[in-house]
Image: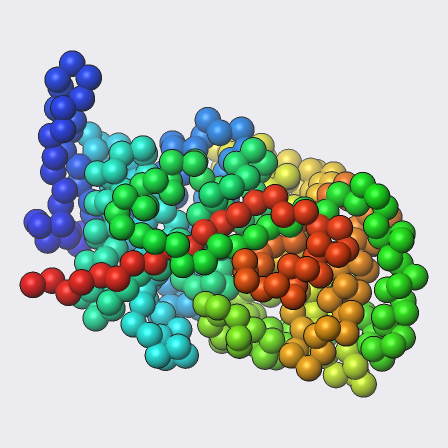
Length: 402
């Protein structure tokens, strides 16, 4: 097992109730299977009492962190830390270093993510100190987060909208997390917005005729993803994805391996009619991806697909998926030359129309958008979206050790 230097092991004896000393706190790098199992179970021990929290599938978290399976590790590096007190895991953190991001932006930053902590500044600060030390040893001079590897993966700390559960591939956390991060000296870098569609005024019906006029005027054809041409379709989407986001704050281009990994994850949940490509002259200029809210189905499983080796959770999941009645649009991309032509509205409206009138969805989230992406935010509001959650990314300079 790899241990942190003695100076990184946090020991404190702050007086608690009745003057009793709190047990020493140990921050250690995850290096054994036992510690990995502890790491993936930390969220349940902290957030398990929150009715809005959705337990992630433990096997998926382990795969996400596995250097042999996740393509991020082909170019980047990462590690994880546990906070232990009195034999119990009381916090965790992921820290990552993406050379592609730093090369793209000529910066020197690392990221932290998968942050969890009991409501104790000593625990949170110990984890963040360990992450900063790891980045410092790699020559990085600042840290951003929560970001799980890069902005292409789950990001952000929930700061507004705690009264509703997170949608598929989105985070959830207690309100006190922002206080813990800010007390360590982290400052706001950027806010991210989530939008909710319930269509109370039947906006889809009102806009349907306009959407068709948009399609005719723009010369755009919107079609569903061709699952039988998977690899070629993925390449078309990747070209739009990387080509459309170059001006977006924090965006780092996805490698072919990362996008294929992402696409295969999506394919397990996707409904082809909700993965749309926009083409002009038979060339892809935009696309959108909307998924059924997997979290609706997975919440009762408590993170497990098997019980005593039997696929009981998987059976329950298979039965529940067709009953899901909400969705999340997680990708909406257009190449620069095709914006302000109504194509974004068309993709949103086609999605809402099919989701509401064919599948029977009662609501959908579109997320996330940058707080200062005024064009897309105004577009979403125009077609009936209401902002209902805010996530925040923080940043801080980390000084070299003397």
